[in-house]
Image (cartoon, rainbow, N blue to C red):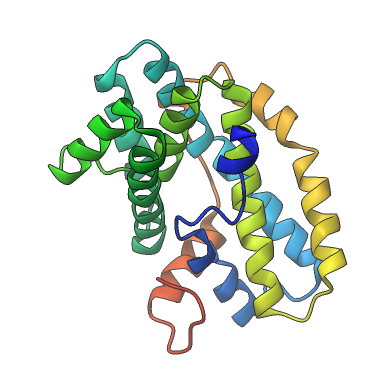
Length: 222
């Protein structure tokens, strides 16, 4: 039940406010139908697995052995790999809201310490690290934490697609189903990697996120 609650795509931490570059992709014609949408979302989730996903697993394991310095390193690693302002804003805004919610709902001391460090400016407070701490507090499995993160990203983007383009909700659900089926393979691919192995190459997504910051017409936040 805790997995369902904290893995809910409607968890009120602000993910509904961002499109992860999808709005610009649609405006620029890169995404224009279900096939191009699926390719775009799949690219985002695969890049997430090899960056945020690795840091999430590292932070989760660090929380299990009560190693705050290791958690902070994972947090900084996520933040420093966000190449543009919009992605940095998204991850720290959602991370902080998740921490505040966890402190109030779970009375989670580890998350409370992390939130205090965020407020002191000692660590940025990224969303995947927040998820790791919440799931470690709940004594759930690291596979579940990783799966929730990947699902949340795909769900966020596909939810945005329903508001941004002409697409049947059935097509969106079919895309989500197929991408969810790849999460186990993504976990196996990165489970043994370290923070030094975090890497991504998605220049089109990076450029689109930068374009979105200066867009004159926007439905989603930058």
